[in-house]
Amino acid sequence: MDKDLISKIRPGAKVRVWERIKEGDKERQSAFEGLVLAHKHGAEAGATFTVRAILQEVGVEKVFPVHSPNIAKIEVLATPKKVHKSKLYYIRDFSSKKTRERLTATK
Image 1: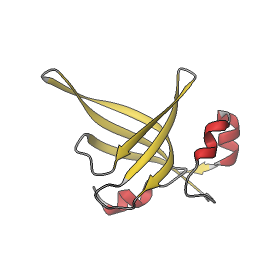
Image 2: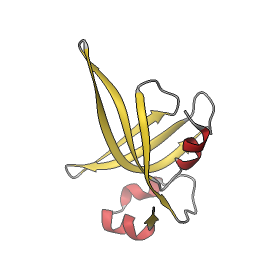
Image 3: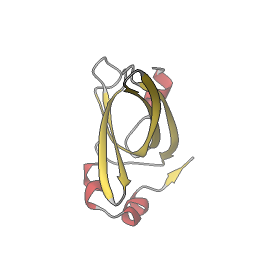
Image 4: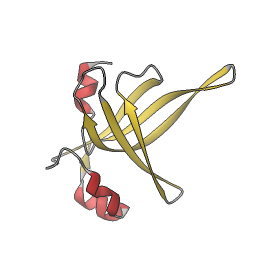
């Protein structure tokens, strides 16, 4: 994965991750769009990032390996102006309105 893209995936960014899903002999791509809560281990081989989304009024979090062959592409939709923490786990307790207030995103 490109180092420029890895640097854009940071806590508070809104991303859309396209992952490859294999069902039997067919393969399809599925998008998962949400807020990046954490990015761990920089750009090394075991680096991961955590994305949180609200699906059908339930919070869902996925941990994606940065260098996984199952990730087709990553789109960074918005980046935050300023985030004071490297891990945004406290966002789990907020409503979506409160989250938007805390993280004002710009393109």
